[in-house]
Length: 169
View 1 (cartoon, helix red, strand yellow):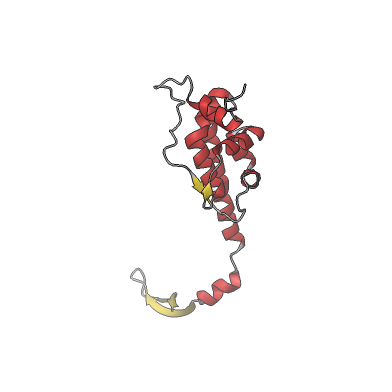
View 2: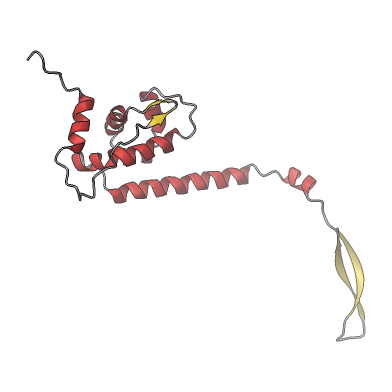
């Protein structure tokens, strides 16, 4: 039909996100009041949703740690160190409730478990890398070996004098 604009997939997603939702639904996402910006460009929420769904949903993307693929799919610079956190945050804020409602790929409990698991793994890696980066030779230059000197000490239980080590700095 001439004269009627065609509805793109992106427009369809946005219309469906707000169509038929109950006001008190626990799955109602945050309305987009400010356009999300990442790397000085508008974050394409439709493309973010599409890429995450193609990979199996938000929980799968977190568990498989494939945010770099999502970043590349969005044509964002791979040098952004906070890309995974920022994309996850934006997705959770605007798109995850819609994913739960329309796709049912995961539950909020599964999402929380994936986030917690990812945090624990991150801490373990940081701790273990700190252990492996420890250098005994460097530690010796920082902390000199204490010199032990024996000093005579009088014991109150006996009248004999015994030698006790004394640490000198």
